[in-house]
Amino acid sequence: MFNSHTYLYLKFLAKSVSKHGVHSPFVYDLVTKCLNEKDKRLNKEVPKSTRIAKKVINYFNTTEYVFLKDSFCKINEVENLLEQFDNDSYMIIKDPYQSKSRRLLWNQLIQLETVSVSVDTFYLGLLFVRKEQPKQHFAIRV
Image 1 (cartoon, rainbow, N blue to C red):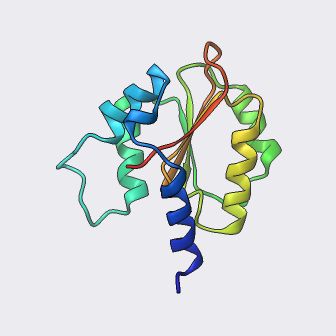
Image 2: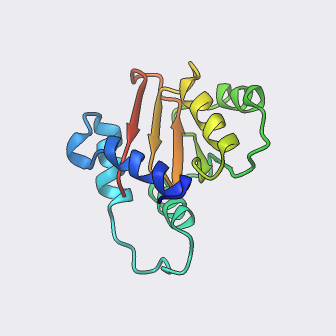
Image 3: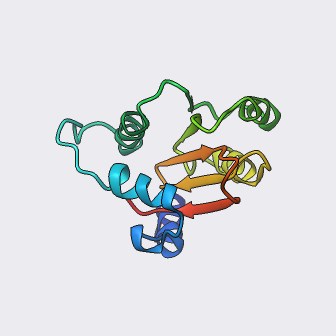
């Protein structure tokens, strides 16, 4: 029988899409120019969530991001932080499916009004506050 993490991953695969299912130019560029790019410099020994995070940070080429890896964060603390974001800022959520508390936090974060775009790669979650874009959630296979 499957363990719960395997079950969650299979469930994610069933609802996720590749670049062909993305109808947002912003997210399509993120997928094709960042998430799907092969980078030989990134060691395969490094956890996939870390490899994806490094690709995202390099892609946006900015220091305006928050890397959230603590599952003990309170939703209102994160919401206050997101309200200070501009269009060039983003938040990285490490391993949103790692535990029940992280799944709950991830699901609460993507429902926040301040978050307009959320990208779920299973290994990593990305939150964007983009004023010009309607609220959308994407589950992307990488």
